[in-house]
Image 1: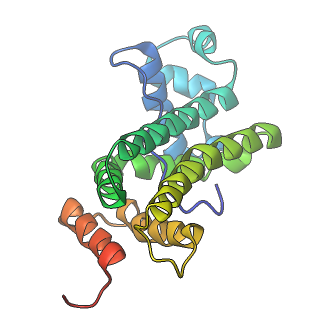
Image 2 (image 1 turned 30 degrees about the vertical axis):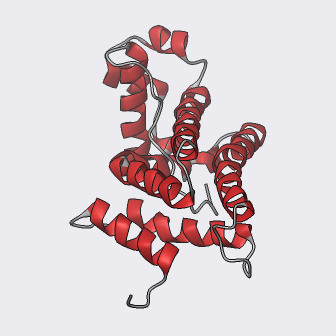
Length: 201
């Protein structure tokens, strides 16, 4: 999705060892390798080891299959926000959020590549997904920062939306590009810079 600066979480979170799991895994691999238009339902069926009718039993068409994986990503985003929200105070909330994000970095990279293909789906369904993305991820993050501001945990000379965007800019590189040698250590260091500043203490 052009303009999105937040990593998406893993693809569809189905229970292990099911046909739907295999469909999601193989479809994600194929979409990442060949792009949305480079993948057919026949190829997905062959990769999973099922017939095309069996594949269509689970998904009405390729667009439905593709969007199902992104719907799973939204569910993952909701879990990240839920886990962070359960902590006391913004520092603990962001630490939880960043730690879980880094733990799932390989899946996040796949999610980003899939999201870049969202432009190929119908405008109506793309808009629906984008609205849900903004509600779940951006809305969830904004709620964390707004609540922290109300508790006096944030500087008063910058509005919470600006501080939220700064946080997103900080964490984005953690799940893009070449992974750092010590991902969690790097994440903690960056979060410390965000919360405490870059000047020596």
